[in-house]
Amino acid sequence: MLAKWHSIPNNDGLIKGPNDSGICTFSGFAIKSLVRETIQNALDAEKIDENKPTVVEFCDFRIPVAKFPGIEEFKVIIDKCLENKEDNDIQDIFGNAKRCLGNDIRVLRISDFNTCGLIGADDGHKGSKWSRLVKELGTANNNQGSQGSFGIGKAAPFVCSELRTVFYSSLDKNGIKSNIGVGRLVSFKESDGELTTGDIFWSDSNKKTAIMKLADIDDNFIRNSCGTDIYVMGMREESDLGFEIKRAVLENFLVSIWSDKLEVNICGEKINKQNLGSHIEFIYNKIKNSNYNKIDEEKIEDLNNYYILLENESGNCHTISIKAEDYGSEFGFADDEAVLLIMEAENLNRRILMTRGAGMKLFEQKNINGSASFTGILLMTDPNMNREFRKMEVASHDKWIPDSCKNPKDRNRLNKMYVDLRKYLRGQVNSILEKSISEINDAYGVSAFLPSDNTNDLDGKQLEEKIIGLVKVSGEKHNKSTKTKVRNKKEKEQMEFVDGEQGNGINVSTTRGSGKHGHTKGTKLPRIPGEMEIGFREEETHVNQRVVCINSAQGIYMYIFTAPSNKKEKLEFFVNGEQYDAKLSILEIEAIDDTTKIICGEENKVILSGVRKNMIVKLRFKIPFERYCKWEVKHYEAKK
Image (tube, helix red, strand yellow):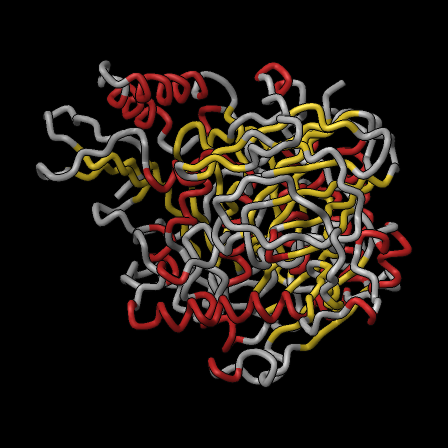
């Protein structure tokens, strides 16, 4: 039988529309998703030579329309999809597809090498590597140590296809050659009036099995070794596709390349362990010197710092091999199943890059230490630990959510496993970054605001003072009139600060629940005008900062930071939770210098003026908490 496009009758079953759930999952980050999912699946594949890296190649080219397999038949199918005039999305998507077929067609080939190929193409049996990639939906990779699966991720190439069509071609380790085309369209009516499922297959069999030869699409490529080729037909137009692919590769597979498990070839340009640094430097300079936004700049800064940490190029890098007695014995983990890397330096992101298996980036764990400047990487390499954490990984491989585990009996255990891991990470970071209180006091001039160590003023009760996230010291409670009063919640009186001048006692207009806070004798702060909010950048500004708890029982703190510029600063205060951050209401606040002015504020926000670049700004304030809490301050710089 000659190859042709095969549709499938839906037999009065489900009707498929244009918003395919798999495709929509990745539509917001098309190139990134394509790179992540295709490389991830290549890394998960069985290797031919375990001593060599997996190689993935991206090649962008164009073909004449006539070279597209079954082009005339395919055009008719697109027209049938367009017969649904009532659905605007269908008209937009397939109208664009029809225009794409009027010119040379752009194709992106993604090829992997040193892999076993799509075994099972010759018989198409369910559960084979070929079947899981081409035919099956929602089935996981059988390799328990794998990063992901041939599940929802295989939709990523279709996101990048203006034709929603992909060809798979393979030479497997048994010498079997195969290819098949797959289109994920919408339900359309055949000429006999029968409605289809919307999925079509380029095959020479009514069973939609593979054609037993390699695809003939790229005239400049001949496969001579085992592996798989994916052809994205009608590749979406990108102004600098090669750069965007390179950027996605480095941001998501830095650890994989550095550990020599992966090599990537982008249109003839190789990225491997030996030249990794030069490629990072290239995209770093391009983003820094081009019209990219602040978020892009921060991401490339983080990437560069992760690379410095991996290379141990800084004298402030620490390597910790995790021992079971410190973390993991309760969950069956042995010594050295994971390694934690930590680096101290200024202006770092205060996050830990979480990786497992072959090293793909999962996510950046935050809420580790909100005051110190550090960055870190967790390398989870042992199959045992990988298998357990994989159980709570979501389909997009960018979160760990214990409730996503398929076995309900495992969820409580997995939740504790993840909670304890975060506790361990915090403990290690705090231990590494711990500094003496005298060093911090000297650097930021906060000694004058802490209780003096005067034994003549003891009343027999200790007051624990704490520099949040760094060190813990013990002081003594004073009987002086300047000490903070213990006040009834219903009382409204001006707050006093330990061992400090009284200040102006400015109140921030705020509402918490049904009650009002902070309406005391101090001057009431004006609310932030809407037009002033618009005058601040949307991207967060990173600053050097420290937090001192003056009296946790009274919710009195001091926040100290280095001003990043001469511009106005908007500060937003948040309480850190494990899953999300909540607004932290500020009851009263004052600046401890002659130049900084608090010009307006409400709820968790204040706006400052009068600051100068590199100036140490000190703010004393009160929050509605009578115990220690973990919180952070986000800075936003004025546009002008």
